[in-house]
Amino acid sequence: MHALKTYIVEDSPVIRESLVALLEESVPVEVVGTAEDELTALNWMGDHQRPDDCDLVIVDIYLKGGSGLGVLKAGAGVYKPAKWVVFSNHATPEMRNRCLELGADCVFDKSNEIDELLLYCNRLASNDEAADEKPVPPPVEPTETAPGATASPTAGLA
Image (cartoon, rainbow, N blue to C red):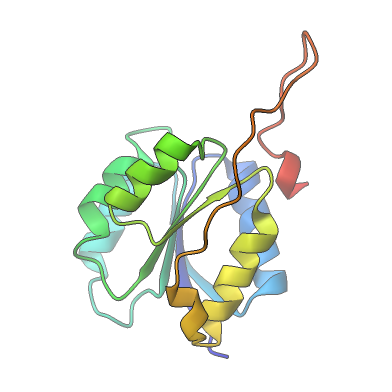
């Protein structure tokens, strides 16, 4: 396995740090950079366009400034051979389709598809051809939250 050079676009410092720690613990990765907004991500990509600069870009949809969709739209078509993964709490069927249309290779839900993300990353690191097959996401069922309670955006990362 080779270390995946990974760039992460995530606005929440808590989630970003948890994701980096989880990836470093579970997958051979080298995190080559992070951004919390669209402009920072696009600037980094503009400065790192050699094919060996990055193997994997993990993007959240909602950012402090701009959008992960903007990052995906600007980068996925031209920033190859990197694989593009959307990792978001907003992985509705409609949003998954939109991300795939914009060039994402896979879309994973932060709240319940962390194991799938890690499996995908490990397959990429091992050059497993199965990683090139887009995983079929499980059916997304609406979750119910008790009255007055809110779902935690970091529930799956805890």
